[in-house]
Length: 476
Image (cartoon, rainbow, N blue to C red):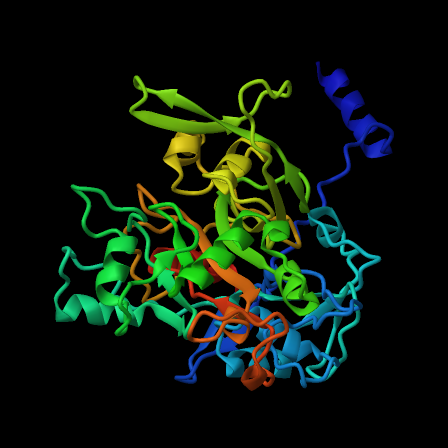
């Protein structure tokens, strides 16, 4: 036994079968930090700043015959700078905020021949470069800037519509008139709050058509009429016609652009520029960053005809399908299991955007329990992993300091519908229609200085602003 032990020792001393000693553990670097009280503290170095989450604007539409910034006066120059394009797209953001992001060199451009995706961002192979406010925009250029540029101030006042009756009182009339964004001799544009029905019946007195007729006539014999509709739970721009002629022509426009055209080239060009843009928060993220959904819809009756549901039509088309086309674009990264997307309906079908998001893309809108109930159940039950958009490292959602999480936001147990009609471009019908109802094909002689197009942007409701601010709070 002694010999065996000695032999084992000799082999170890010879070094033939010796086990190398473990490498010394690298000690974490220790730095000395001095705070404002001149107290020195030892500790690990602070982590560096995280990469900012970027908001992607649509490609610059220059290069055509029309003005790339609709709604400007005809005499405005065609040359468009970067700051003008950002201010145009984010018209509801204060101009000093946009300018501050340019001054801090936080605005980047991406040319049309390079595509920025999640993979290219993580591999640092994206083609983004910093731009100045006076750089001239070229067709196809994309601009990326921090999500925080669109953070909105949350106001608790006037968030819910009063309990109106067929004869609204003075306070209710003042509230409704505060919703008005634009008013002229032909049209009226409102920013509709959520949870307000469109069309009233005997038990529903606080619908938009009844309230507008009672409170927004402004001295006319007849109240304004709804040109189009929004869902009860959705919010955003709502267009009314103040005269019979304006209502009829705009209703044709919303039904079909070709139906609204006349022999006037000026009017037809304005009709071709008609557009609506919605912002929505969806659960998950589409496989493709942008695209066009062409999926016909049909209606089915439920509960012995008492309710109906819109579904994707059968390919055979035997169930009375209606054509439905929607263009979409992902605006930013996936946070808390959700993504902000921009929707542009090219047809106007009932629940078109909600069904296309839920069934065609597989990403139902947050708060849409009719078409995304099961996805909501899985989304709320399972923890949502969040990752740094550049490094891919997991991190937790942090609530912005001083922001009260209001009922209806993305972090509440029962979020409200996150679908908002944010932008609308329509012909300036008051330029072609006189006060007595006479139609002028090339515009009235006294209205040559007025633009051919009108563009409106409506700020998001409180619950969507809070969701936007929460998701942009990943910025450091």
